[in-house]
Length: 304
Image 1 (tube, rainbow, N blue to C red):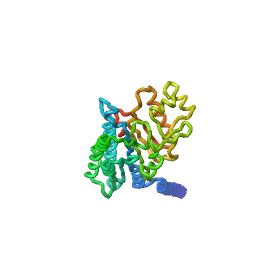
Image 2: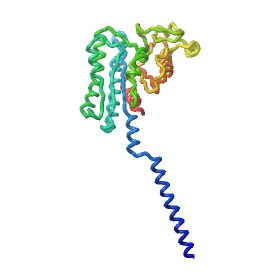
Image 3: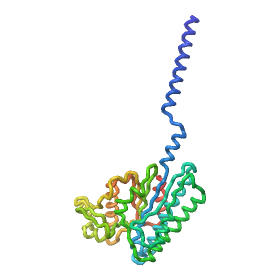
Image 4: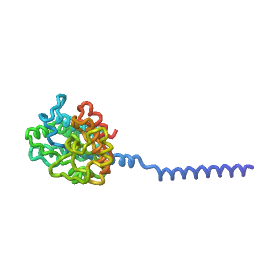
């Protein structure tokens, strides 16, 4: 009897030891080390933010006055909100993981060399090798002050070179705004209309441009505008075919008030266009007061 008891005890102990060994083996093959998980998460958390400014006459305070706040001042405040989000994002990261960028573009480049010099001073790369409180403050200060200088110089010049937005998406968005290992965000400051003398292409009812005059000539001015737009395939010509690693935030849309359907038409043009180019994520926002836009902008940049 004692022999049988000892055998049972031995068998039970053997089973328990084998089970423990299997669990340890399973743990080694299925659970990643905390450090590995952290590094993967931090790599995906690198921000690469680009701005595209439209310096057309939409910013002219004489031609398009607004008693509440000039449109160029709204633009500058939107840019500051983005920069504040960028700076806040950096302050949540460990120094050794910092690898984030912010930059500003025009297309075409302004003829005024002062404006180009200012834009060059708005290119920052914050890495583990140069990160400091002073640098973060410098980034925020630059984006709080220099954009308003850019707009003021453009208004003073009174030349309004415009923005070749369609061509920027075609020729530069991938090369300038997209990098592997980053969350790539392009912030477009525009009233929603696209036009440049150097880029006027029409393929059926698809175009590289859209102005209030075009919307009227396309007869998109009545309540059946959406039926007509879809049936006759009005819209922008896709500028490229794969922006799946780019997020786009469009700020400052300001439709012509003569057409009550203008805003919806602009939003539809842009939405269809960005979808056709496979943009990963986008939002389109009107030229509302910066105090109303601040949280919306920061939520997009911080991916909330």
